[in-house]
Image 1 (cartoon, rainbow, N blue to C red):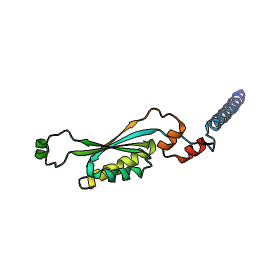
Image 2: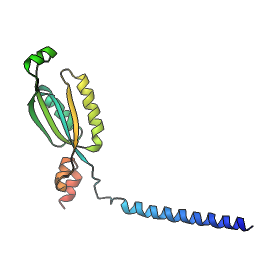
Image 3: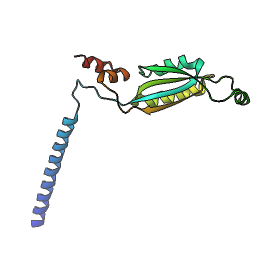
Length: 157
């Protein structure tokens, strides 16, 4: 009989402990929950794309469709000399390097679309990679770079 009473007491104590832990966890989650007016920050990365110079406009428009608010196109030239280009059957070594700031959660979609376009567009070959940005000064700049108008509007108050 005493074993049954001890088992019931232990069961009751464990239920109480579980309930207390659940309440504590619920309070912690509520404390961590963002306010409805705050904007969730998203990490930014620098998207660097190297393409043929004559396709630069096409790729800047394509990249802009992924909420890339700021882009810079730098004209470049390949490093191979004319003799090697002729041997490889390549005609032109004029390139454009496109730098743009993109949100981290949009990178997988952007990279898959870029990869598809590199393979399917005639003379549209290219290379793309991302570099993490470790800090951005000011909420207005962050809001502009992340194409988050809500951040910019809230900061003006």
